[in-house]
Image (cartoon, rainbow, N blue to C red):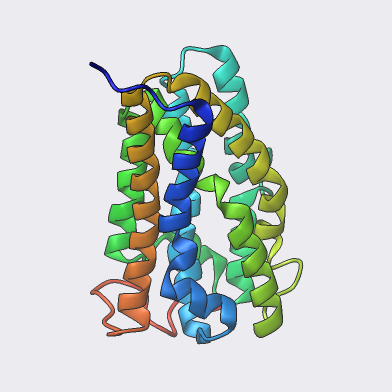
Length: 248
């Protein structure tokens, strides 16, 4: 006899528990960053590598939309691309991230060139893009639900950076401030869609696995940063070294 499918509320609680246990706000690197314990070069390494993730978000969303036959879903989803790319040059989340790069003393052109990205960052982020491109629509959408937990980490980050780092100001932190209003809109739609679509236990399991995978993508990026720039501080060949890519 088949087990009873958990209710909508039970399923949502399961998704939220994944974040409570696995979201990358619990990683030691984030604790260092938010408490002012990161050196300037450790912050720069984070900015450089996180750029690769930011730059691939609209590519991931475009790949997803290319498989969506429902115009309503495409309309709801396409704002995510505009949020990151902007509707014209020099606006949008990617441009705001490059303002942060400039604020920490990096040449934005160097950061945008993607030279110096850690190998593990590339592997993790590229795996996420492939997942969203290739998996069924339900897990592809469910993987985005780490946004459920993002506003909390953005608030912590804004407060921590403003308190501890000279580069932090409303201009350099504009990416995070903007996401405080963008992310809730995105996650409200994504969560409702997943809850409506995952009508069987098998569906719910697939969505939960996708969300777990995404938390692992985020965690792996911080593991790579910690290993290369904190302990044992072993920078892989070809990855960014302090002093490279700085503003003149």
